[in-house]
Structure formats: C-alpha cells, structure tokens
Image (tube, rainbow over all chains, first blue to last red; front, side, top):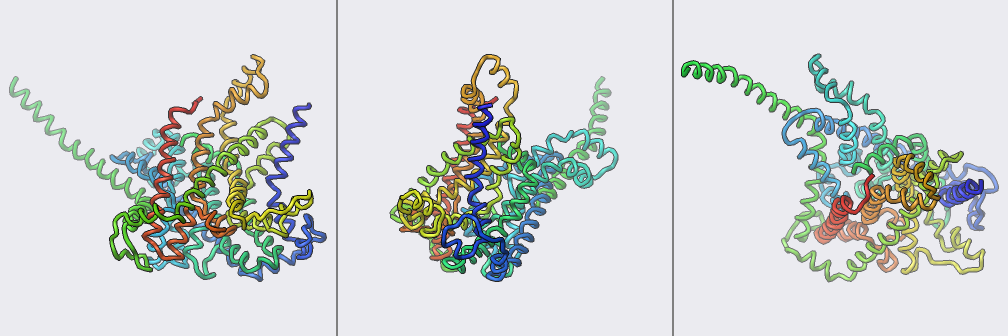
Length: 269
Length: 315
C-alpha cells in the first residue's frame, strides 16, 4: 500500500513537471497582457481573442496548411520509396543487394546538418527555393525507414512469394497486395515518425523559404516571436498552441505504433 | 566407352548451355528489376546525401564566391584557420560542454520515468502518454515556450525565485548561464523520445526473471540494479549514443533562444556552420566545420558499434 502511494506521488509530481511548460503555454494563450505582466498562472476568463490576433498577426492558417502539405508529402514519399527499396532488398535475389543495403545504412553516419551547404546550392540550381519540392523531395529516402521495413519484410515467409510467382503473380502485385497489407503496423509507425519529424523540421525550411508562399508553421512561429515579442506574449503562446495541437494529437493516437517502431529500431540497431 | 563418354559429354553440353543462359538471363532480369525498385531511393540518397557529403569535403579545400562556387584552391587552409580561430574553439568547447550537460541528465530522467511507469498500477497508460508528449513538441514551439519561461521580468522561473526571496537569473543573457538554459530546454524536449525507447526496452525484459528473483528474496532495489539496469544496457547504450549525436546537431533552440550569444557562449557547431555559410558567405570555411561535425558523428557511431558489441550485457 505504502509502495503504491510512493509511486503515485512520484508519477504525479513528474507528470506535473514534464507537462508544466505546455500547460503554461495553453494557459498563457488565454490570458490578457495584464495577467501575463502580473505573472498569473491561470487566466481569469476564457477568451479566444488571442487566437484571433495570432491568425491576423502572421498568415498562420496558410503556414499550417503548408506544414500539412509538406509533412503529408514527405510521409507518403518515405513510405513508398523506403518500402520499394526494402522489398527489393528482401525479395528479389540479385548480386549486390547486401551491398546496397549497407550503402543505405551507411547514410545513417551522415548528419543532415553537415550536408546543408551543397544541398542548399542544389535546391537553388533546381529552382526549388520557395517550392514544395524543395521542402519535401530531399527527405523521401531515409535509412531508418528502409532498415525498419527490411527487418519486418524478413519475417514474411519467402514461400509466400515463391507460390505467388508460380501462380503468375507479378513482383509488383505481390509487393502491393501482399507485402504492404501485411506490414501495416510498421508502415504506420514509419508514417507517424515521418509526419512528426517533418512537421517539426526547422533548419531546412528556414534555409529554403524566404517568403510566405510555402513557409512552414515552425518558421511562422519564429516570425511571430520576432514580430510580437515584448508586446504580446499571449498571442505568441496562442500561435505555439496551434503549432503543438496537430502533433500532440497524432502522438496520443499513434503512440503505441510509434513505440513499436522506435523500439524495433533501438533493439536491432 | 570412349564414344559413350563423348556422347555423354555432348549430351551434357547440349543440355547445359540453354539452362545456363536461362539462369543467367534470370540473374540479369532480377538485377534489373531489383534496381528498378531501388532506383527512386538510390537517386534521392545519391543527390541529397552522398553527393553533398563529397561536395562538402571538396568545398572545404576552397575559397568560394558569394554564390557558393569554388574560386581558388587553398588546401588545408580552412582547417588551419579553424584551428587558430578563437571563435571556433569557443564553439567546439560549447558543443562538448552542451553534450555533457544534456546527455547524462536526459538519460537519467528518462530512465527514472520509464522505471516508474513500468509498474502495474492503475492509470499507467495515461502517464505513459504524458511522459512521451515532448516527442510531439517541435523545436520552435518548445523553444518559444521556454523563451517566455526564461523571460527576465515576466518569466515563471524568475517569478518563482523572487517569490522565495532570491534574485532573478539572467537566463539567456548571461554568458555563464545561457548554455545551461539552452540545455534545460533541450533535456525537456529529448525526454519523450528517450522515455519511449527505454520503456520499450524495459518491457522486453522477461517477467520470469523478476519472479525467480522474488522467490530468492530480492528486494526492489536489488531487482533494479541486478536485473533491470544490466539487461537494459544495450538500450541505454543506444539512447546515449543517439542523444550525443543529436546534441551535436542542435540548431533550432539556439536560433530562437540566444542566436549563438551572449559572446558566442551558445554558438554550437551547427549554428556556427549556418552563420558562416549563410550570413557571412564563407561556404568553404563553413564546409570545413561541417566535415568536423561529420567526423564527430562518425567517431561516436563507431564507438557505438565497437563498444556496444563488447561491453554491453545482452540478454
């Protein structure tokens, strides 16, 4: 009994500390400027005025839309390219496939930040600055995704592929109507991971957008901080909540899938 | 006999070649099909990872113009300039100090949270969601919240200090404190990922081990230090290397919280690359720094592979 009490106290205390910054941001997004200045913790009334002002301060809705387009595109791109690559590595016997797998794994050694200079120049030469392709295409193939899906595809019995071939099933049909449906949990883990990491991306969108056309909401938030700081922290916090909401919802809904994927990556990697 | 042998030989050669060409054909066909499936991923990886890596190395031996085109070869001069630069030395020591501040703390806190949520008590799923939640917090949003929390006059932290009679801290404007403030923000944001992975590792430890330990009369702490932590060591090792590498790649929180200042005390390596290349236009000089970042990550990944295999206890 005593033991249980101790655990609950620890759990509640930790939960309070971990969630405090986000809870405070939500709370501050409803406060008046006077309340912020006073250092209040809880707003006296529930008004959405700050949200209205946040949407007027920068084109927040447009930025949110851009982030959705970019994150969704990268997610689909990663699912397709990584699953195609992993399929070939597992099911199609040809010389050198292990080498190619090794090549993909080797890219895990390359920190993306170390490549930004030539990548920025490449995207500029392609005429992709301020476009969706510039924000999405470079992230379509990730080693983590190929690795994760390969590990899963290896658990699908080879006999299934052989008998499908005897029945005249083409390799692409096998990929599309057997392998992909059999891998739904791993695909959703990778999909959630891809969406989250793209939504949260900061450095790259900062580099390849210099107007509001395709700018993502993370950079919009930075614009808001520079535009509103010193005057309207409550409006900035309303912007923060709008940025946090989609990913927090996705995380709560997809936590178990994500955990399965990340754990598989950790234990085998 | 001889004739028979010849015919037998002939028969062999008659039957074998077509078979050989058909398997050969199949081999080529498989190679073609395999490469077809792989080509989209190979092309993207080639253009946006392998090429830029070699290009960065190449650029690091040059002086470039403002458009990033190399104009004159200078050998290792960018590297010797880095070696002699006081700014870069500050940046490197800040980078290592930052790893030292963030990595052990993140892992200890995440391990603690994973251990207390691995208990079988009511409401655990709720706490697991809560402790993973910072994984869904973007760098920009997280840093913006902490920018307000650290605010010298409006921030909750200084209000708390004032309430207990202490004077406020210049969280982001004092050269001695700013790096610690950025580290606090980073630790908070990293907890979600580390918690999820460590919890997954804990759940993989078989229940039977604990049951037989209980029969032997082992208490909570004995179980924790004799079973849980040793068996978790591969996962612990994995998260520590990932967290170190992540700390070398820190950028967003610096850009929002401090802009590399005050007096370069938070000018971590990626921020330094960004500033040299895209503010000052020194692409060659920045490329040399990028190569140093690459080597750093390479060393730590190598350690993971080597030490990870030997020193870590596997179940």
